[in-house]
Amino acid sequence: MSIFHWVVVTCGSHHQRVNSLNLSNMALTGRIPREFGNLSFLISLDLGSNNFHGNLPQEMTCLRRLKFLDLSSIPLSLSNASRLEALDISYNSLQVNIPEGIDNLHNMNWFVIQYNQLTGSIPIMIFNISSIKVIAFTGNSLSGNLPNGLGNGLPILKGLYLSDKNLHGNMPASLSNCSQLQILSLSENEFDGPIHSEIVRLSNLQVLSLGTNHFTELTMEDNQITGSVPISMFNISSLQILLAWQNNLRGFLSRETGNLRKMQHLQFSGNKLIGNFSTSLIRFYPNSCNIKGLTPNHFWNFSSLLDLDLSANRLVGSIPTTIGNLRNLRRFDFINNKLTGSIGDITSLREILLGSNKLSSNIPPRLGNLQDLDVLDLSSNNMVGSLPPEIRNMDLSMNQFSNEIPREIGGLQNLAYLSLRHNKLQGSIPESMRNMVGLEFLDVSHNNIYRIISNMM
Image 1 (tube, rainbow, N blue to C red):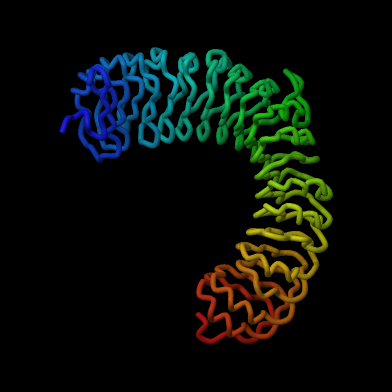
Image 2 (image 1 turned 180 degrees about the vertical axis):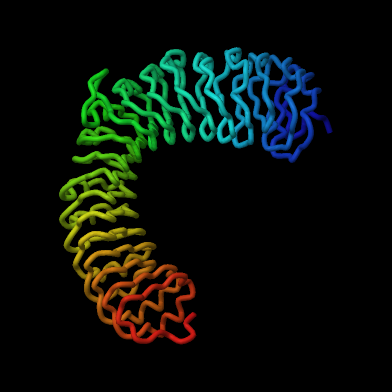
């Protein structure tokens, strides 16, 4: 069979010379053959996920047509590969600085070295490659500041991934010049200072991830720091994901969040934001944000919401009955607030987390009809009455439940976790609990149980 019919080889239709070679995931070992340098028409070479070692052969610098190169743990010298357009060396064990000669790669548009052990700083010359569309160094050990003029030479940059490192200093205001930017990920670093309002000029931005840094303010304009998140932030109509958890942001989050019609995931947890929240989201995590007062009724009109976390705030009052309008809601977490009264009208949920509040009603019997319910946490409240017989996976500790444990609970064969400690339950543990073959944790301490099942364990 001709070499040109191999699955891993692609040849040109006219000259019948090899232009693409894919040897990835073949458990190859040893050194890269220097003969690869003779494939003068080669455009794409994929050697990823093998066990090659040693240096890249000098002969490969003669591959002037090479545009795509995917390697594994190989020390690089790329200064002569001037036609290279795509380089991906992610998920390996490179323990080097970013290689020399990057400024000669004038045609590079995809530069990805994620989840290695790169050290040192990011060479400034990378940000001068005007053809580049994606820069991704997430998951390394890089350090240092980002240059102030980072965004001045990247007119078509679409993705900048610099999370999970030790970068520090201010976020360059010049990023606003990257008009094509769609994804900006700077989370899990040591950035501080303000997030400048120029960021609203990124009209194509879809994902903004700034979590776990030390940002202090979102500013309305240069040198005018305010105490609130600016309304202008919510004019980026293309934004779908905004993550700014664990910073030092303060102030009010405006109702203008409702302008973000494409927003699906908004997370401001671990800041000190208060005020009104209004948006049509799928996932919303304003936990630990010092939100005060009643839970606003209009909040429950967002029918697309799947996941809501308002835990560790300062909410008071009861859960509005209009929560029943959220027909798609699968999880809500109100743990550690000051909610009182009844649970409210809850319909089709998988996780209900209401621990550490001041709820004092009976558990609604209709909770037993939630076929998809996996987690129910009502611990550390003042719930009273009898236990409903058909709820799976429960933490009902530190309440005021009385009467006996219902015998129907033995039908919950998939129940893995059950905590009923610190209540006023009495009687015996039902014989039916022998059938709970999936039960891994059971705590009925600090009750008035006077008999346990022999041989239950």
